[in-house]
Length: 163
Image (spheres, rainbow, N blue to C red):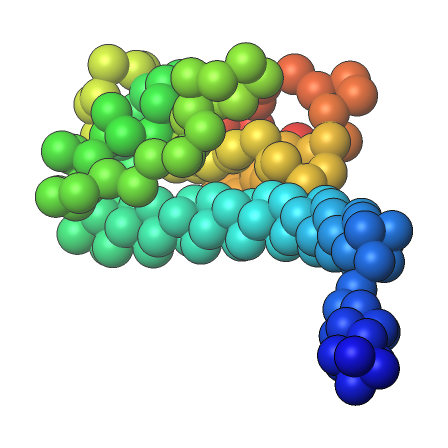
């Protein structure tokens, strides 16, 4: 009888108490929450890097277009950059993944000239709203590239670079 009793008490010593299990579960929950918070910031940075890359693709296409058109660009003012894709010969236009959501715009294009898509513009500006910072990322035909703070932002017109 004594042997059976000892066996039962040792079996109880090997298990975890309810409090120990709850502590471990709560620690795992806290660590998972910290990971998710840092992962969200990384996602924003990745989407911003994609925006910058997409705008650079538009800029490269505009420069190729201008080389074929005697140095002139298509003339539009403040339109979605995707609307100039047919002029540039781009099949699949890059678009902002969050465009249409509150506070987000699609990539935007502005150029001087007579407008309506005629090929007589001599300068342009491309821009997009960044997600990780309260800035707009701007690319200008004169080669300037950078961030412009959202405070005091006004959409560029006539291809005038805000940098």
